[in-house]
Image (cartoon, rainbow over all chains, first blue to last red; front, side, top):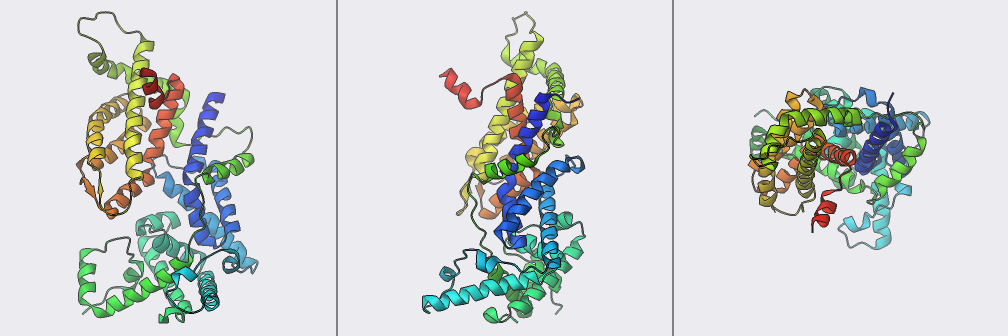
Length: 184
Length: 251
């Protein structure tokens, strides 16, 4: 029988874990799902699953990787649900992405805005055409900067399979985004 | 000329230095350079759009507030790696550590002519204070490295000197924990020692890449977090104030 003191100590440890990793989990979830609402759901679900699944956690393994794995899996679940319900990403409409500043152009502002919106929609559409695993591998490698071995650990596949998956993702994005920036 | 495997090219990222043969090949091969440029362009387009909405410092607290409401009210949470922090384990670990460390500590804190034996309670408290202080100092070094500015080369000679001082004490605590069979405590101190050694024996001028690698190591292993939790539990158990409060009290 665990004492109240022990329970409080454990709860304090978990709270510290949540507070320390929330922003990292949100960033990953947003990059995986593409919108704030889904990302917030992923953050919450990730920590609830971490709480439920503590028995499966290896004390010697890095807990950052463990949380990453849970967050990626939660995000993949959201993407699968979205795909099965035929829901399209809402980022281009929902997020306040100020691409105008990023475009080196002297064109009038309304045209810049239209172009920026177009890029945002194209990228969201291109990303939505990736499989869940391809998106995860691409995001982890190129946006999160995770080493190949780390991605292999998170996705539970071999390093060569990670490279193949990233390659497929890049190929698809290249095809989809070719009209932007003439990258064919 | 054999070109680079496209799968390898697709995984190259500016955040990581490619292996020397890959670098050499890219320098010599215009075809592979052009392929890499295309990949970099694609990644840049995606990452420019992927500007993550800001979440402030209080975000962690907000998430905890949402999550905690959904946790089972009566289910005890036993987070796995800090099981050694449970009060019963801590008591055992503290007493065990004390037995083996007493010789060392007695040499430090008591004069040779003093013949009165220490009571177990006093010995334990001395150990708890010493270990707690050690962990606080170690955490302070790691925090300073984690928060070092990222622009240009960073001078960490001060942190390096402190890490060097902490290594010897850490080794003593780790060996004591190991001898008493407390592998969990020993494992955390071992991780801490590796990081301290890396800092102490590494370059005193860190490039942004060196600093990023060091931060990744601290974050991946969760060393800072574990050290903070151990320190916090020791203070709570011994009802010790934090270092700052103790220092205020002294002055």
